[in-house]
Length: 90
Image 1: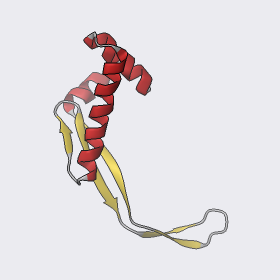
Image 2 (image 1 turned 30 degrees about the horizontal axis):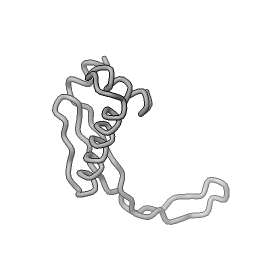
Image 3 (image 1 turned 180 degrees about the vertical axis):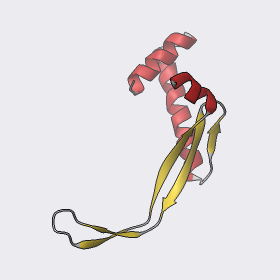
């Protein structure tokens, strides 16, 4: 399922026009991103928890040359599925 499929499913489920459903989906995704940008967890009970995690800087190797290289510190997004989501998928 991609974003267009999700918007269509939301529109069908809620009987909203597709343009309104697209606005709703975009607003939800924007608020999740804003919450993560503010270094907060976004917890959707029953679905899961999104959180921002910082990876430490490390030393890696270029697979072609074998040369050591510095990998800078970075921030990534983690997702931990909630119980209801796990049960639904199982």
